[in-house]
Length: 82
Image (cartoon, rainbow, N blue to C red):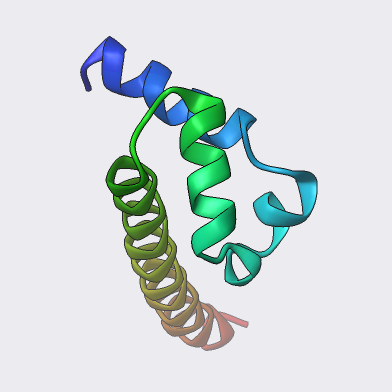
């Protein structure tokens, strides 16, 4: 990851309120403009960061579900040992 991009993402996140960090659904067009101004980026860059966040969140939920299922399969094998 490019250091400049990482700093840009950090600036965008730091320009968000606590509420916006907790719930991305509250970020409307006006808030996106304010975040962009506060972070020295464009609205498009803010949109890109939000989109990447949502993609990562979805992927982690799917991964977490797969991990839970694989652990359950492993527990089933262990129960036969007793």
